Image (cartoon, rainbow, N blue to C red; front, top):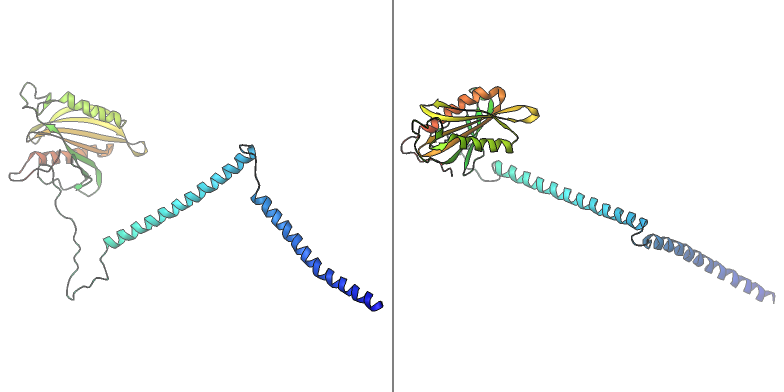
Length: 273
């Protein structure tokens, strides 16, 4: 009887020692699962204040993620372009070079040409050009930049300038019409026309419109527009310079007009439409 009671007590103790840890683990796991379920399944009434707050937070997180992706992609593209430009601008060091051969760096020293085929003045450097306009950087005798210039064809001459209309037309086109084009341009560029007159350049009458426009930092830019007839075409030479450099760029522009008027024989004109 005593042995039976002892055996029964031992069996109960062993059973409790086995069951209690399992129950504890399951209880703790159940609490953790409940917490996760609450966080994951937290819902608000649609279009309520809390719902809109959560929606905006989610949208902002997505926008920030997309912005970081775009920024990373842009950096990758820039690095790839920079590497490509470096490879194209340099000499390929992996290419075989014969002994005794020389590597010559070729620079563009060809003369800058005007539409007439005549060489531009010494201080005129090439700029961005198109089918309708040639642009130049203008430097003085010391190589300092004093402004920019652009040469374009206004249109064909419509007739000769007779003595009665010599001060009112250029290639048969009324100077009032040419002045109106400059006024319209200055209105678009927030500038203003100051004066207009005709002067003799290289033995030919040239119509000049003087204008001004605001520049960087509030400085006033001097704008000069020259109209002259050459070989049946009316050319426009427009200059842009700081007000202090207006006289120097005027001298350089008259050099270009002289070159423009001297069309050499046997030289094809540059294409300007």
